[in-house]
Length: 136
Image 1: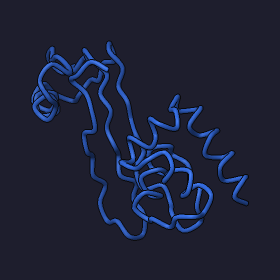
Image 2 (image 1 turned 90 degrees about the vertical axis):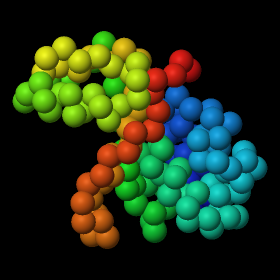
Image 3 (image 1 turned 90 degrees about the horizontal axis):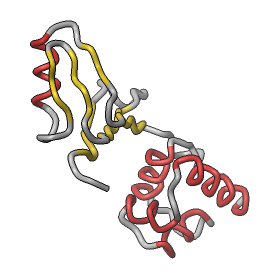
């Protein structure tokens, strides 16, 4: 089971284009702690939840994926129902991430958002901006 979980973790990391060091950094843990968690030697629910959400894969039966990451690449356009709605969306983003032209927002830089998935425990969906507006 432990080997299977590590293999599943590695496959999910490859699909996301993440190294072990990058995933550990994104979760806020050391590489050793990431390895211990994947082998079942650490039961940190918070870290396991972050790993599942970042990778978008349920690796542990008791830890469902509760967020999905959504990335808008440069050049991506989103058309809103009105210019007012587009402006409201534009105002929520850091400066320089996108530009507004009428009803359309065009992303100038990559922007990543965490979209909360509704479960029995969460009653409303919430969006949270993760990154954008800086060169990586």
